Length: 319
Image 1 (cartoon, rainbow, N blue to C red):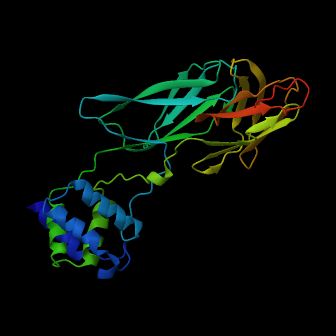
Image 2: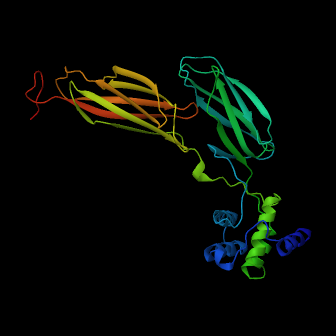
């Protein structure tokens, strides 16, 4: 009963200085209907959380901003431990000296790990997460061969906890006993005071990794030049300085050409090479493109054919 009285005081008295003035038209009817169904136990708690997310999108309430993250994890149950796998890649291929990994938790506490690196430049480790680990955004910074690699972020959250008495206030609001302004002000107050815990991550900002596109000729005449343009982006835009490894093979898995370079400020890396004039028939080649920015990596395959024209010397014509 005390907590119900506390909520009543919040909803009825809190001023609207922290939330701009709202009218009935500002909260869509479909959101009201969804919350009303929640108060009647006809939908799950997630429906109420979704409604609050929609209110946040309309700037009617404000969640705490969270940094862009690669992954989100939920705290384990009491007396349980889960392990978060951290993987990365250094552009210093062949440098097998260890990576120094520094994990900074939301409270600012730093933990350092020393991790071996494979000749390919890749490394991985696991860090523990307990039921009482701090919630919020963790930053992972890696150093290898004297260079700082791109930082990596992940977010740790609790399961959203909605107090049972919240339904009482929401029901009053759905019945018109509480105005929109009072309801929104009360919700905002509970969020600000961390009474209502909502760790909502903006999914649109989660890093999906590297996006690699390859443009080139699908059919190239023997004795001429093949040109490939490789473009690299991530969730922030064009990637400058990503390391690109290119390997050209035939179907017999013979390596014909190898290239290594970095993307420019536009996220581009281009290569070209002259094809032999000795091919007597149609030949198919595979181009393996490996790209890494020090944290994420991506492999793409580009296939093309080399042909000759009937009537040319040593060219097998097909009917």
